[in-house]
Length: 427
Ligand code: HEM
Image (cartoon, rainbow, N blue to C red; front, top):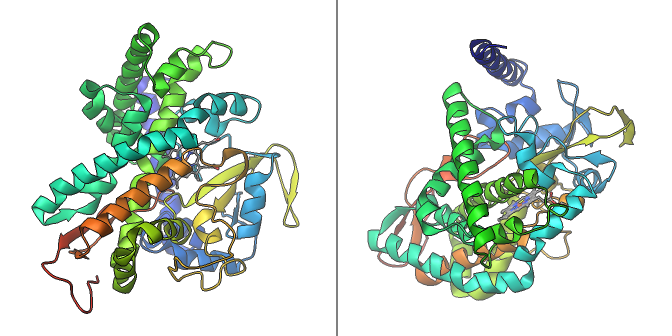
C-alpha cells in the first residue's frame, strides 16, 4: 500500500474506533466502553461496580470478556493456558510494536529465558545498592521543591525519580539522559494506544532515536562493560539473548520503569493529602507507616488498572466457553476493590490486616519484575516527604492522565504551609 493509503487507513481506523467507543459509552452508556471516556478517567471505580453487577465474567460489546472479580482475575493471570501475547490493556499497546514488549508478551520457555537475564538487576542485593541512590535523588528533588514553597508534586518528584532510577539501572550515560527521558516518555504514552497522527509521528521518531541510542550503548558496553543492565544484555551469548531481542528488552524495562512508579507516588500522595488525619499519622511515624501506606495505595488506586489474556484454545471459564482469540480483560482496579475479598473496599485503610495481596503487580508468570523496586522508590519518596514536609497541603485541582490502562495524576499542585493546621488541608 502507498504511504498515503497507509495513512488514510490508519486515520480511518483510529477515528472509527474512537467513534465506536464514544457511541457505546455516551449513547448506550455501556460501562466497559465508558471506562475509556472521561467518566472512566474521572472515576473508574463507580463503573467497575456496574460491571460487577453483571456478574463474575461478562461479555464486552465487541466479542471479548471482562472480569471485575478478584478470584477470577487471580485465576486468569495464573492460568498457563491463557497468554498475554497482545501485551498490556484492551486494545492497549496498539501503538507499540508487539515485539517491543519483549517477554511481557511471551510464554515459557522464551519468557523464562529472557526474564532470568534481567532478574539479577531486581534482586534484594541489587535493591540494597539502589536504596542510597534513591534516597539521594529524593533529597535532591525535595531540596529544589522546598526552595520554591509551591510546586507540582508530579513534575518535581513523582516523575523525575523513576526516570533517574531506570536511567541508572540500565546504565544510560549522563550525556544521553535528557534525550532518553524525552523519548521514553513518548513511548510510554503509547501504552494507551495512539491518539492522533501527530502522536504516531512522535512515537516513530522516538522509537528510531532510542533504537540508535541503545545500539550505540550496546557497542560501547561490549568494548567496556560496566555493572549495569545494558552491559549484562550486550555481553550475553546469542543463545541467551538473541541480537533481535536486545532492544525490545530495553524498551520493556524503560516503559515499565517510566509509566508506572510515577503514578504510584502520585496516587499515594494524593490519597494522603486528601485524608489529613492519615497524613498526620504518617508524619508522626514515617518509617513505621510508609510501607503500609504504599501497599494500600497499590490496592486502592493501582497505577495499572487492567491487563488482558487470550485463551490459546477453547477454554471454560466461570461456566462460560471462550474461543481461542477472545480477549479476557482483567480489571485490576476492580479486583482490588472486590467486596468478596476486602472489607470496606472503598476505604483507604493502611491498617487492614489479613487480606490477600492486591493484584496491582499482576500474578503468575508475568508478575511484575520491578515490584520491589517500585515499592522501594515510593516508600522512600513518601517517607522523606513526611519527614521533611509535614505541613504539605494540596494547592489546587488535580489534572489526571488522559489514559485508561494507566491511572494517576499528571499534575498535583501542593504547597508548604507555614504552620500546622488544626483541621488540615483538603481539596
Ligand atoms: C507501581 C509500579 C508498577 C506497577 C503498578 C507495575 C505493574 C505491572 C503489571 C500489572 C505487570 C504485568 C502485566 C500483565 O500481567 O499482563 C507488570 C509486569 C512487568 N513489570 Fe511492572 N509495574 C510497576 C513497576 C515496574 C518497574 C519499576 C519495573 C522495572 C523497571 C517493572 C518491570 C516490569 C516487567 C519487566 C514486567 C514483565 C514481567 C513478565 O512478563 O514476566 N515494573 N508490571
